Image (tube, rainbow, N blue to C red; front, top):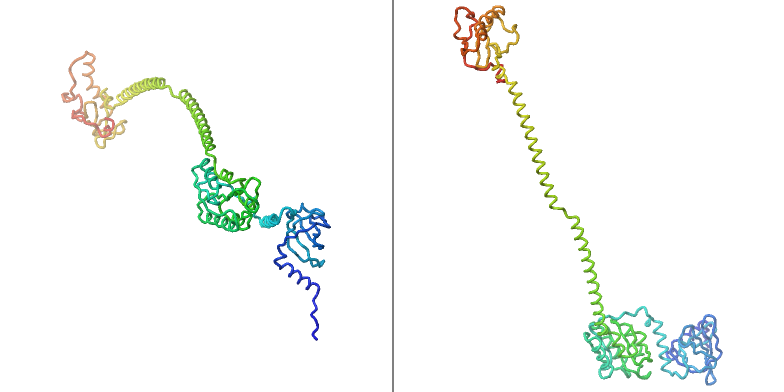
Length: 455
């Protein structure tokens, strides 16, 4: 006989846990019962027992789960959750995720459970909600084409902002197929990428009538939309999961249409107010500019040059310049005259005209300034005002006697008085007044070589 297989406690506990938690019926279960043995610990978790039909189920509800405030000793509730096996104590517990009073019904419990799960996934996170466009060009509408909602939305849009275009994505908004059609319509509008904002709308109704807007596939379609979505489902008191996932919630379809469109009357008032502000600002700017221009004109007038005064100054300067130039010309003319007189006085020819003579040697034209420069018999050239005389040098004593003898007639005539006679040395008698070697002979005046630079 084959011996039985022996399992450890851990193996059995693991097997029971796997079996219990893999059962589809027990993984999403709603149980009705009376609360007993309620105990809430410091961490906020609640432990209790559900009793009914002579049986009991141990339950645990962690802090923050939906409906935890409904837990009360002896309270008849609907508890939704999943069975788990707690190996350390060997107990099977109902891990409760949502609690509702029995009067709320099963649909409310299911809704609470779905809302809790979607919230945990972040579908309701306020940080992901997008702003609506201020001036949309096209609005997509997901609703029934035959209902009053579509007409109401058109009327509101025509009244408030007729510039916008409406694009209807028809879908059933009630019944078993409604959720799929609504999700598909949202997907079509996103695929077209022509709408700036989408309205998902339906009129009021019971929880059952609005149940399609609580469907998970509608919630996920709204969450996945690349276009901002406004939910306008039911009346003011109706609140669906679609409202919580959408970027904005409107209490009614008409309110949703107002939410996505600017008010034409308000826009006109704003434009008029802006026009008045602009005109006021423009007038103020013009007035300030005119004031600045006036001030600058005054400054320019004060700083502008006095043309008449400048002209008078130019005339004065011109007169002074003319006077200075005239004075300088006079001074320079006088200086030139003085210099000319000095040059005339220093002119060698003028000196010769006053009776002076220049004696040079005939051989080399050297000016004779000392008797020792010429020997007796040397030929000399005597330059006078009228020309050049040839002469021969003699002894000084003989020459002095001869000169006095030759000059005697001239002296006598000067002493006798003025006469028109002119001494002609060429006509002097050869009787011996002057020796033949010192006889003077007139020739054409020509400056000696040493005087050419002076004459």
